[in-house]
Image 1 (cartoon, rainbow, N blue to C red):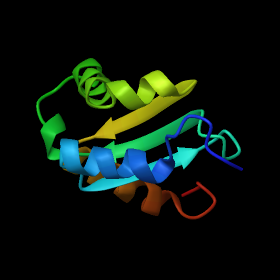
Image 2: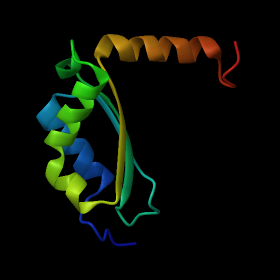
Image 3: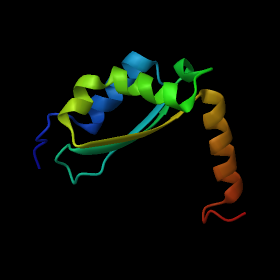
Length: 99
């Protein structure tokens, strides 16, 4: 299916990596391929010392043009240290999410 917005998960990921210096990015297109609904996990050292709101504002400002073209955007932002803790807690929980 053609991307009606011209925005793709790949283009968002590339922009995030380049402009935010992200060390890990996962962008998922939840719109069935039409490029209208995206969610992302973003890990960047640029988030160090920032509140959740400040991190969200930084991402939204960085992706201002792309977000204007799509219907819905959500993201989870982490510093590298926060992401490491998330990864550790997930591995400790096991594959079924139960310790």
